[in-house]
Every structure is written in C-alpha cells, then in structure tokens.
Amino acid sequence: MSRADAAQVHGVEELLPDGLVVVGADQRVTFANTEALRILACDRSDLLGRTVVDGLPLRDRDGRDWWAHTTAWNGVSSRTTHREKLLVAPKGHEVLVTARFVRARHNGAVEQVLLGLRDAEGRQLAERDQATVLSTVAHELRAPLTSVTGFTSSLLRRWDRFTDEQKRLMIETIESDATRLTRLITELLDISRLDSDSLNLRLGPVDLQALLRTHVVRYELGRSVGAVQLRLGARATQEGLPQLWADTDRLEQIFFNLIENALTHGDGRVTVTLDRGESLEDFAESVVVLVDDEGDGIPVSDRERIFGRFWHGPSNASTGLGLYVVRGLVEAHGGSVHVTDNESGGARFVVRLPAGMPAVVGG
Image 1: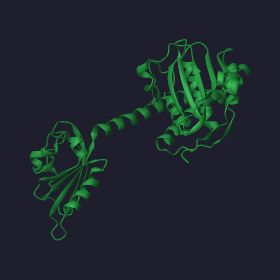
Image 2 (image 1 turned 180 degrees about the vertical axis):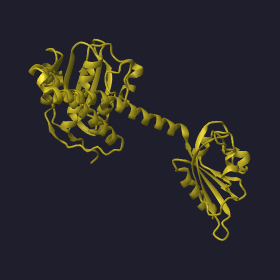
Image 3 (image 1 turned 135 degrees about the vertical axis):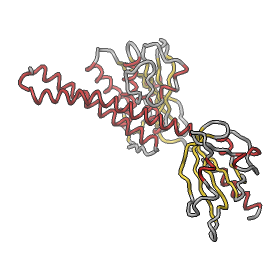
Image 4 (image 1 turned 30 degrees about the vertical axis):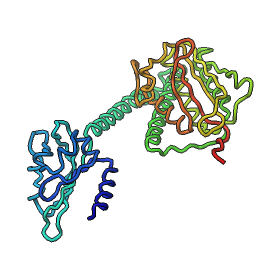
C-alpha cells in the first residue's frame, strides 16, 4: 500500500465513532485513532511501536491479563473475533473492548488484531437511564391501573350495594384514570418517535385562539372560576394573528401540558397570552404564546433541566415527561420554547411557532 493510500485509509478510520487500535503480527501497536486515544486517556507515543503487553495492558475485573486470556496469536486458528468485554484500561478506568483477528489464508496465522474500543461510562449511563425509564413507567402505570381494576371489580361484584351517587363517582374515577393512562402512553410513544426522528405531523390551518379558548373552558368547568385566563397581546389586538399551519392534536398536547404544569407546580391564577411575534428563522411571521403562573418561579440553574426526561424537581406530582414532550413537539414544528420569570416573579413559558409562508431566501 502506498503512503497516499495508507493516509486515506487512516483518514477514514479517524471518522469512526468508536476507538480503533491496530496490532501487528509482532504484537506491536501500529495504529490508534483519535477516539481510541481519548478513551484510553493516553498519547499516540504511549502506544505506537510498543508491544501490547507494555503499551496496552488490559485486565479483566479480577486483575487477570486479558491478552494472555484471549490467546490471540496462539489460539484456535479458526477463531476470528472476540465478543465485547468490559476491561480495565491502563489508567484504571473501564472500557468496552471487541477484537477481530485478521488471519493469513495459507496458514491461519494472525497478521493483525483490530481492537474496537467504546467508552464504558456512556453505556453504563444509557443502561441506568433505561432502568430509570422502566422503573418510572412501571410506577406511573401501576397507580391508575390499580384504581381502574379495583373499582371495576367492586362494581361487577357488588353493583347492587352501591348507591347511584357512589356508582357515578367510581365510574368518573375510572374514566379519569383511564384518561391518565392514555395520556402517559401517548407521551411515551411520542418520546420514542422524537428520539428516533420518526414523528409525523399532520399540518393544516389552526385557529390557535379558539384552541386555547377551549382549554380555558375545560378548566373553568373542572376547577375554580378564573383559574386559567386567556388574553391577546398588544400586537395581536392591533394587527390580528397570522395564519398558523400546525398539527392540531400536537398543539393540544403542548398547551395542555404547559397549562397543567403551571397549575400543578405554580401558584395562583394561570394567564395564557397569545400574541403576534417577530420573524422566526426562515419564516416571516410567528405567533407567541406565554403561559404565566403566580408561583415562585424556576431557578436559573434548573431552566434547561426541566425539559429533560423524567425531571421532577423537588416534587413528584407529575410523570416528568410533559415538558420533554413539549419541547420536542414545539421544535418539530420549527419553533422554540424556553422558561423565564414574569413580572410577578412566577414562571413564564414562552412558545414561538412559525406562521405564514416561509421567507424567500436569495434570488
């Protein structure tokens, strides 16, 4: 292979997402990409030209020499790979290592050993995150399911013993918990779609003022009068609102979650303000929705963290999914959402959504 070809190959290897170390037939390291050096926390001079025993001593959790255990150069000639294993790197931290043995065709001798390295901390964090997701989902599903099965069982077995008022209360509770289950499952599915970039939006013209007014009416019926108020901002009052194209169902989710969040974690009255906004990236016009509460506000240090998955803060009064879904759905529409303080010191969630036709770029 010419120097130019070798340089091109090594350039490709530098683009790999994992670390790569190449060991020659003489058991000396011939190549290590930048990611491998980062994972091993060493310099290229610490590896290149040195034997693996000296430059890259890998041990299992029991302290045994992995190179002696793998018998890469004197093992079974049909062996070409070694499955991923968690090993201790020279600097004492754990890494995930896979191996591929490149053998000569005529005698099966090992000509190269290709080591794939992955950061074990990232995998462990992902596994812990997955365990947290499963635990949280199981907990959130258990409570409403227990309520639904309990009440339905009681009604089926002792129907005649309950008064009409008791039956109505139990059926209303079942309906409420079933709605809660549906909402939780919808949020979980949306998280999966958002994380995999497979969310589909059904765009169409939306009367956002009417949609928000419907939310306010619902809260008027279910809570004390005046708990949620809707008003138009100054520009919307003077100039009207631009035409908004969006997914109506997704907007329902966004503003249900934001208003519910304000009622649950804020204090006092919740005020929803709809206004005409400035241009937003490629869009000449936008609409802005402010959701204000009269609570103590959100500390600056937490204002990004609250949009993370399963963020509860000091309270466990919600699933911790709502705001993560809100941001994902808003950004899927090409908009943005953030939180700040309002004039009274409470929290203010600011949602900006593109409206009208995209701005013309260039000639």
